[in-house]
Amino acid sequence: VTRPADFLLTGAGELLTLDPALGDGPLGVIREGALAAGGGQIVWVGRTGDVGKEVRLLPGGREVDAHGGVVMPGFVDSHTHSIFAGSREEEFAQRTAGITYQQIAAAGGGILTTVRATREATTDELVAVATRRLDLVLQHGTTTMEAKSGYGLTTADEIKILEAIRRLQEAHPIEIHPTFCGAHEVPPEYRENADGYIDLVVGEMIPAVAARRLAEHCDVFCDQGGGFSVEQSRRVLQAGLEHGMRPRLHADEFAASGGAELAAEVGALSADHLLRVRRDGIRALKAAGVTATLLPGTAFFLGLPYAPARAFLEAGVRVALATDFNPGSCYTPNMQLILTLACTQMRMTVEEAIESATVGGAHALGLQTQVGALTPDRWCDLLVLDLPNYYHLPYLYGVNHVQTVVKAGEVVWPREVST
Ligand code: NIG
Ligand code: FE
Image (cartoon, rainbow, N blue to C red; front, side, top):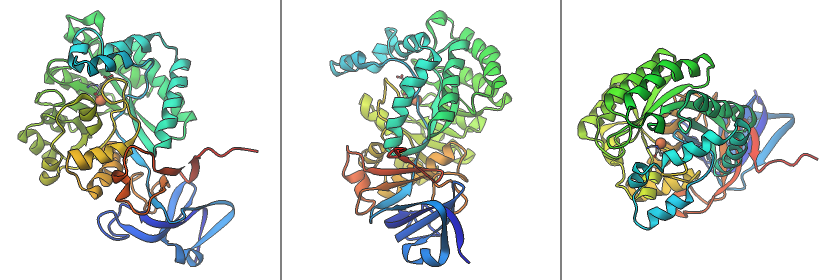
């Protein structure tokens, strides 16, 4: 019997299913691959030569010919600060002259520069600037992304950012998962009173965000010398949990401050950055089943050491790769560049890097049954890459290989011009 489908992809030189049971090697590669979807979800994967006996494309259905290119799942970018106003090119120029990111932050710049611009913006303005940014994200192959608040730092401004994200969820093809990150930085009003700010986050912001159902996750910047202490971070994450938000956190970015251990203690979905993680932190993540989200674009952009990816992999910790897309520490929407950095700077294999940027990201967001792999019943979120084989993806770097982006069985890039 043939399966009815409203979307059919044929002619993939390599179809990376990301399920080793469906094809060759750890990425489950099917040569001369094909895939069919119905109602946005995958119904069949196999070989192009078998399409005729397996699939029946319904009238009005869409067919895409990959012309021998590589087809893979859309990237799942599980850590972004992509909703903000303004930009920080002057601070970037200062950094090129030798001033550090942390010196800029200590002088009232950095995150607070973006806070000032974001507080001044209306919801409409935030949606407009973020739409252009998300278009870039989509063109570079990300079909699912996390987006954090954290540039408002008042109840009203944090809600404004999350409401902008809600409007983008409705209007933009990218699947967006919102995170409340009110404890991203101490705002100027609380400069000498970080505990007082945590009281506001816990007592007012989290209940207000939860009442409006604006965030799935709760994040906190847990670090030493900038950022919040383990005790402060624990209060935020526990309050988030009590209000139905799943914990995730910025951990051990600038100092080994116990963030990984806290992630394990509260059962976080993910601990992120981890440049300075200790052995005990790695063991704690493994024991608690927390995903380690590595952001090599940030280490690259700030000139910091890279997270010990091999130590995580050898300890059996699940690894995700994400951009950290934000105007200060990593201003790129491009997951393909992150793959190159993971391979060349963190010594991940090409296969490990691709898995971490798809399946790994899905785990970091708790979406592992829905996205990240091209297998029946998952969303049909895929990329057609103009490449002869998947090794070229991190190898020919600094350019965009994405030719076509499909989200839930619809071609969303290039935009189809209606006539
Ligand atoms: O993940 N560490 C804190 N937050 C961001 C930086 C945000 C910014 O500089 O605007 C990060 O690197
Ligand atoms: Fe971040």
